[in-house]
Length: 366
Image 1 (cartoon, one colour):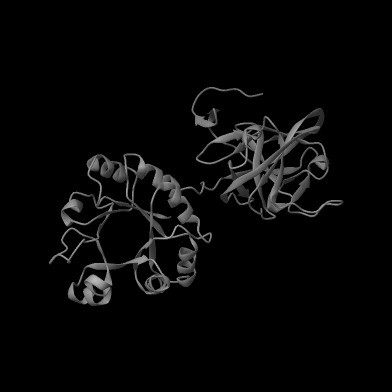
Image 2 (tube, helix red, strand yellow):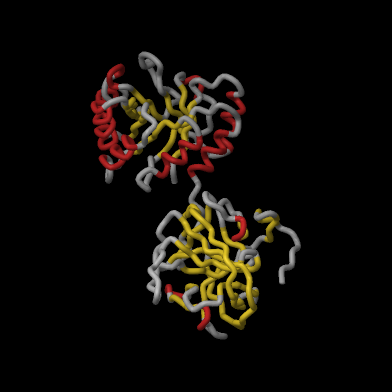
């Protein structure tokens, strides 16, 4: 879980409301330059002091003190002087020397708070690589929630946490959302195919993403919001054409797929920059960014299946042998060769949908 820190040192307007929101959103830490500003925080929030000038004589009510070694001395020296107080190191990266200091801090300190002055993320990449395997936590300053999302993904691993100075109520919520961007894992079920039939012409969508899918991974697609089948990407060899491991030949344009934040989208709604949830045969998930959606007229095939609880599931695909779905254990199944009794992997959302959002209401799809 990525760490979310909120910096209230320069927050005057609506500070009380911002702190209240931060507590409600389970923000991990509040940063202040006065211990008194941290005194009223509940124990669920880490109280972090980043003093402006000299250190105070005592650190009552403070969980962590972030210091500048050039001003306050090293964390090791301070730990000896103040037993029972936890210290971390602040580094502002402006050149090669300070970058090396940041790398050393990330390798050796329990807490490293880093401020990069250049907009490029290459210095952060260098620090993360230098600290690979280290036990400490790296907290990187972000100017806004958009940059926070980027920082969380640098070198795939990202910074352990982000420090953001909020400008208004709502920023704490947005920061938490950026940190929790990875969707929850899903419980997949085995579905039994009951019927396969040709249904004529229609438009189908190929979803081309900005990532390589694994061989046991695809996206969930279904005609109904309460039942979907796991469509595999074109990672597996095909005759007459090269593999396209970024692509899922996903289904008819009106089909649902799982996007992010619990939402679904119609395949026809996806555009460059949209997000979809990649799912493997174990239900593990990750976010994939859509690079392109190809919608073309093709012959279509309808696959009906039933879940162990009796839920009926339908998927309409391009009527072609090379369009595939996944079965138990990662078995790759050519859609035109499916027959009653075959097993495919699927997912059964429990809620109905209104403009893609889950909602508990009566809704019948047939």
